[in-house]
Each structure stands twice: as structure tokens, then as C-alpha cells.
Image (tube, rainbow, N blue to C red; front, side):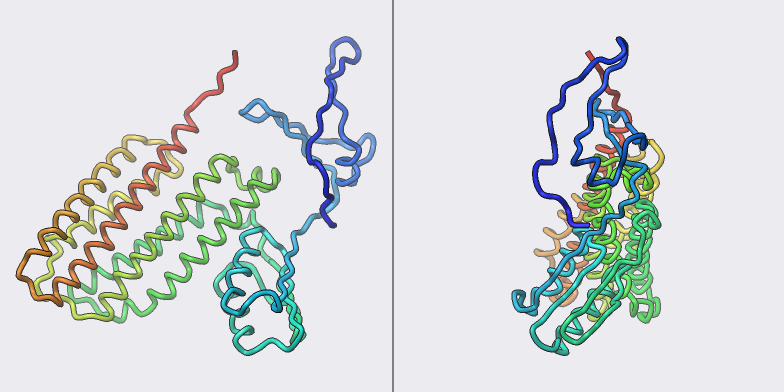
Length: 348
């Protein structure tokens, strides 16, 4: 169904009927758009902000968002970006058109998009027209489960990096790029879901996350994705360059890893439970580790360590420091969420 244009709000007067009941009439346009009739029921929710939300539970109309992409107007190097934009917009169907046969490069871009996201499949490829549809119900992937999956992937990357430093088989790093791609795909999925929560009351209810909290979780997801970038950078470093023989798990910068692992575990556990003291503790440890790494990097620049080893250690320290910094951001986001959960609405 094509969305109707025009104003999406109206001012209505409160009326008194029967001497004790206040009523507000519903706009005819809204009734028509939702396929409702007289005597159909609507659900009214009283939101924490004091606003009322009217939900057309009886509506049988299914709305889908469609995006059309014309290759004549979009250069090849921007096609993937436009497909991601369509995905994040909540599109259920993406149609791609061209005035000639798709090139091999364009077809590769379409396949890469499908591999890089969750739930989209190519359903119709006519050579110069291609259709993709989403097969994933947004309520089938709970937000917190996806966030926990991101954490597990990132934690595994850092653990594998540590294992290789102490003599583990470098082959355990071979699937680090695949894990990094999964972290990116989960980030896109979660941002798509948050967008759908902001637009749809039914999805907000089914996922059990308020719009305010969903917007904070979106910030948290981006923070995790950046941690994933640096965890992959560590694996790539250990896989591509010689590891210094002087490196030690009990000395900086590597000694920070157990501190980060313990802190991030506390933070993730507080997505659900409410132990603000654990968030405080994790943030304090991370800030201390971050300062230690900054000082280590300053000292490293004036040391007489071989240049190749010094460069390796500096890059390790920088990635670990940034991982700690993003974890600190995560702690602050969790504090925002906890404070909002614990706040009370006061009426005059």
C-alpha cells in the first residue's frame, strides 16, 4: 500500500459525553488508512511520558517498505552503500533496475550485499532487473541476543590473538576475517531493528525494548563494532608480522587484555541485571588500563627496542587502548540506560 502524503497530526477537542466520559474523535483518514470500521477495537496505551498511543490492532492491512535503485543514476562504487541504506531504512523489498544487462562487477556487488546482511535473498534476476526481499521477521532476533553474539565474537578474536602470542597455532586466526564480517552484519541488523522499533509500536512491544532504550542500544552496538575492528586488526597483525620474542603476557601492553576481558564481561552482564557498582568498577579499571597504555606508548618511543618490534608493540598498544576507550563508552551508555530505568515520572 502506498503511504499517504499530507499532515500526520491533527488537533482535536476533548468532548464530554454522558456526564462522566471524555472522548476524542479519530481522524477519518487514519481510520481509512488502517482499514477500520465502526465498532472495530483499538488499543490505547498510556506511555511513561504521559502521551497516549492509539494502536489499530484490528487492522488487516500489511505495510511493506520498498526501495527502488536505478543503476543509471548510481555509480558502481556507490551501489553497495545505497543497498545498505535501503537495508537500514527497513525496506522489505529492494528492486534494482538498469537500462542494460548488469555487469559482472554489479552482480558481484549484489551478492556481496546479500552475504553482508541478514535475511535478504535475491528472488528474481532478469539480467537488467533484480529483486531482493527480506525473509527475516525482525522479532525473531532479540536485540540482546545479537549484542551478546557480537561480544562473544570480539572476545574470541582477542583470545585467539593472545593464544598466538604465547606460541599457539597461527591457523586459529584464519577465520578472523569471517568473524569480523559477522560482527559487521550483526551491527547492520541491529541498526535496522532499532529503526523499525522507532517506527512501529508492534515491533517495539514484541521486542520488549522502549524507543528510548533502543536508541541507546544503537550507540552501544556501534561501539561494539568499533571494538571488533580493532580486535580484527590485532589478529591481522599477529598473522602478518613477526611477533617480538620479548613480548610477555605479564607486561604491557599485553597485560591489559585480562583486565579488558574481565571488565567487558561485567558490562555485558549488566545489559540485563542492575548492578551499577559493577559498571563503576569496570569503567575505573578500563580508564586505569587506558592511562597505562598511553604512558607505555610514550616510553616506547624513547626506548632502544628494535624498530620492527617497537612498531609491532605500538600498534598492539594502540588497538588495545582504543578497545578500552570504546568499552568505557559502553559503560557510560549502560549508566544512561540504568538511570533511565530507575527514574520515576513525577506529575505536578
